[in-house]
Image (tube, rainbow, N blue to C red; front, side, top):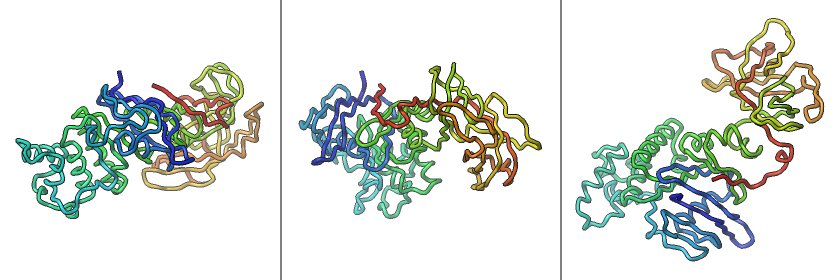
Length: 374
């Protein structure tokens, strides 16, 4: 039995469909990230789980307790759900101690000790208890907001873009600290974010939304390496998509012969991630190999410190049949390269593909069909 169950949840605002039949399951103690472009329905879904909105249809069940059955909905304060908003939403006129203890009755025995324990749990020093929110850094404010959300020992924590206002370094550090804290506490968590890397690193289950529907649900590794369609693939990171002819687990394409993750046969489109390519300079032209090797010319390079890219033009000269038929030498690929081995413009390089390519069936290249996985 799932800890949190959503079944056929629908929501409309006038003629606009915000959610169209959402099914979602969360295991106890798990971390789920919900991602998608603006307007995909992420925030609406979070508000329905929190109780700020009621669904038009469908059910929300938390640990066996019915929270919503269509428009009949339990109010937010009776759901035992903690929420951390994008800006922390701390009360500016209250001290850190008063913010953390806001939901605790003043008659609660051990209230002050509980506040100090929560502060320590979130990695903050007791010296800030008397400070106001405007005297804290962004990272400190988010941790205080988390401590306040944990004060009443909620069954579920909802994180609504909680790290987006932080700078890059602080964002990664705070995210890791929050992740470790929630894991140690065994609290089931839902993170709504527009940051793909954040979702993949934080969650053990990722759900991708588009136009009010779930396109795919699975582990971060599954969604990144085996997306159900090109839209999911491109939303989670850069892709290289190439037409190919598939036979017996091998794709015949502009790059040569490459192993794929599917045993189907026929015309299809394969997907590779830029980091699957290795670039090695060659001193003289050689025939492309049959194990994912191809020759290319470096057209331009972009030095970005730890993240460098090279734009290369294939020079295999190989012609394919069917879906892969094209002039290979015209194909441009943008690849990630180590700053230590960044090639010069005009260099001839050999491309080697690591791992398998993912296969997009021909009928999924143009369709964006909803997908559900439990």
